[in-house]
Length: 401
Image (cartoon, rainbow, N blue to C red; front, side):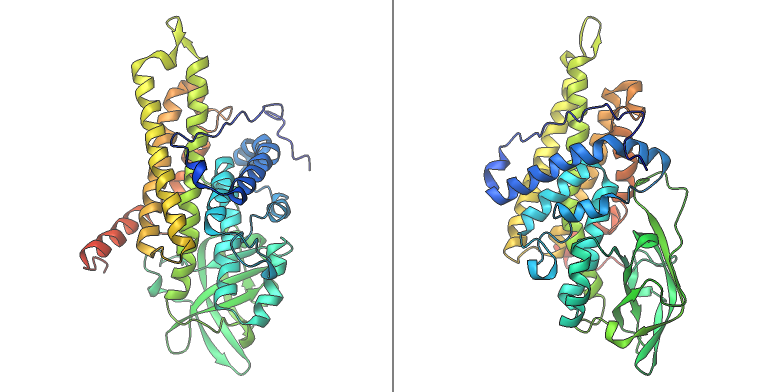
């Protein structure tokens, strides 16, 4: 397949980074090198093709291997297990640059690293780590994460997927929904209830009889990311594939914290791309004899955009510093995920207005980011659920259920 977008292959990615408070001075050389390498990759490999793939609703699967080559799979996991051996801020800035390209591309990477490699590293046996992690880190294997079910999203404890004992195997039944990468995945980290009704993780491999992963079609959002179901019909899984080191919801929730952390950084990238495009357009578009950037209401939009981006950058940097010290709480991560995604969505909408009618075309990125961010607002914990997590944290009172 020709991976060049025929309609806009000649279009140059003119993005320039915006750092109003000089936050780059808080980053070390490794952070900046990693970020710049991913930025250049996005400019050369993602930007020329992403509008075309998104319009067609097709996943650019050839990018999986390249994501591995640029170190986007598990950047903060140890090198001996296929990770990058970097810190949490490096992971954050990599996710930011990927989402600057497209939320779907960042989803491909954050699922692989945070929701597949991380649980195997954190909760798996040494045998499981050595068997799966290097292949996931190199992109030889693609993974997915099965928690959400058709009837259980925000309430994962209500899951009905379960397994029963069968000698040296277990027999798995149930289904999962809205699973990024699932139709392509070689392995799935699946959370299910054991015979005692407690939640455990299992590694389910493609090709196990009774296991299927049909694709979900008709999405208006994350159209360049492949999404599907996971269906288990009497799937016999070896007991050696059960993650041995965790029982209960704390297992999948700790993985979600890792992924939500990456989203808190990633959403800033989408916002920056929209702001950058709107700022440039406002200086080039002439109305009433002068650039629209000279009008007060346009300046209001741009000034508010860069203010909100700067606040989000500071929030993410501080969260990254806490994460590096092992001090970032799930509630702190919830606050950053909720704030930064909502901020990015609002900026995408305002940027679209500055572009006028051109803003709804794929000549500019705003509408694609806007549609993508509608999903990001909901997945990995909805906007409302994260609000209630903060509410419970500050009051000590549980509003759930």
